[in-house]
Image 1 (cartoon, rainbow, N blue to C red):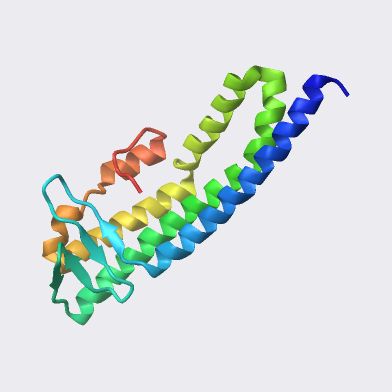
Image 2 (tube, rainbow, N blue to C red):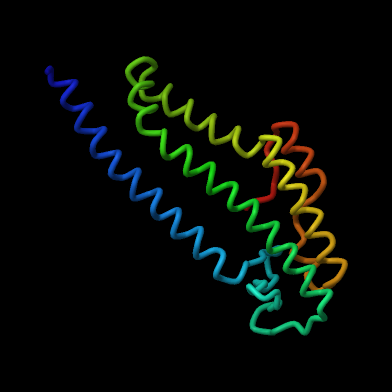
Length: 177
């Protein structure tokens, strides 16, 4: 074996260990996300809001009294948000699983910069797939229904129909997940 092959195999072994650790961390983060309150972000100066696992809303340190219908709307929004996040975790897990072998093989053919650009392009495509954009639209609809029920959450309703259209057109959109 030549030195280049030995270095490449050493890098592969090292990176595969990192990949397994990253995938395990993502699995743990995903599970924790389902057990913790969902944080809502508003514009600057607006206190943080949360939706608890049971649908209870808090804005800043204040618990917001809600009816059963309002809790149902907040739980629907929470479920749609978690579904979109789960889809993102699934994609990240898939990309991570195959990133190392792809990076090493592509580096040989296209050089490191070309290989990393290919992986980055795949990650960008993932947030514009029909399934992802459909899930984003579901989240927008649940957000609008939630705000119709719980007016105090209006400052946190940041996802728009334009964001969904940008997603479907493959353009960047402003909403962050």
